[in-house]
Length: 199
Image (cartoon, rainbow, N blue to C red; front, side, top):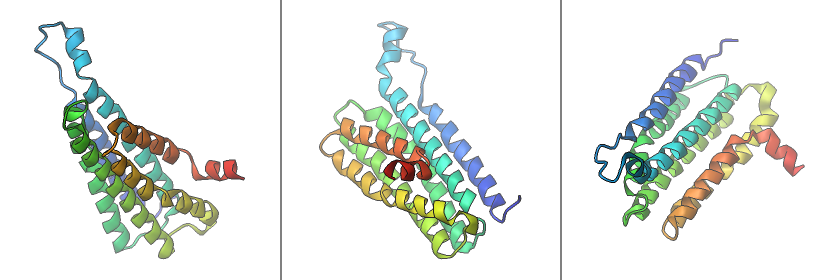
């Protein structure tokens, strides 16, 4: 069934697709191969790690955006603006990914991780603002209110834990990045499955 949010979803899907594709541009072919091509390729491990992490995170964000708009059936001007702000956060992900891949394992890796975590913290806040606006303005399909409540509970953790990831980067960059990975898995799990495990 065509919904009022059809154009929002189509536009958003295009933006997600472009953002996730741009990540690969940070992977470079090594030409200075005095020690051999294999060694040069292995030396680029931070770029591979940052690429895989960000690809996974954008993928999880796309899944969550899809889940939200399974429930959101109407839109208003504020929802449009909040969705655009969220997409602004999504399209910025290739930049902190490049910063992280350039400095991971080096003396500036803490700053790079803080920038990386900071972008995801902002995105988590924007996801929450969009969703809470849709709930408050009753833009949801009334047939899905129970599962919508589960999404609200799951999303409440996001900004707080992303803030913890950011603060953890001051102490340990690897632990901060691992926490980011755990968060991605947490938000990959459908809210109803989380509720079933708690029951």
